[in-house]
Length: 204
View 1 (cartoon, rainbow, N blue to C red):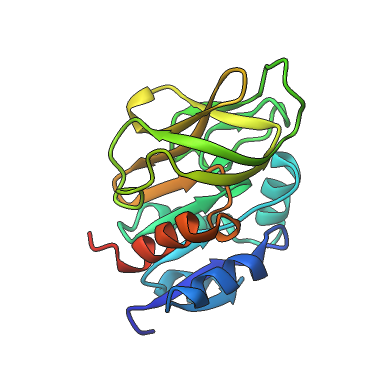
View 2 (tube, one colour):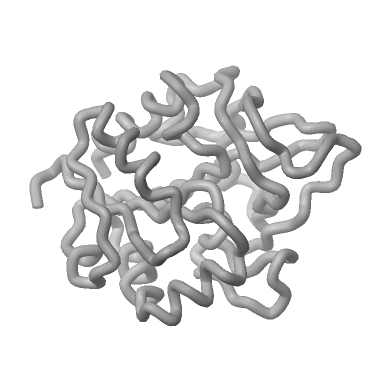
């Protein structure tokens, strides 16, 4: 695989084609695959996700992909979780009591408690709170969200951006080679495409 190849993990529960098209727009070479060997060989990996936390983890496990995802997470290669894919990086979720997440980050995914309408759907402004190699010009930008739950890390220093929705919501997280966006960069116009481009060019 060439250096611009980004493997989008296909485990039957992701917004694959919108992410694929977004990566094409920034000059990447996206490959959709559910083959553990392809994931292992990938120079960069994206874990997308839509639906429920429990269904996604169950499907990933039933397809025998959890080990490949864990290896990618701990390999030191650039790894990005998007939307539910970001939530799966945590230990568990109130949405699916008893279902273990990937556990890369310590913490839980919790239901958004706000007087505003749930799900949190549409454009919202993010504020960067800790450095991220993918979000150097993201402060104050508007990005697109669709979710009812958000990550609450044990270590707040891994939160890279937040947004206000009548309460503070975790918009993105990151540590080392692993980054996660609660929002959809592929649906977030120029701001989101800039983040995908930064992921393509990110050197560790």
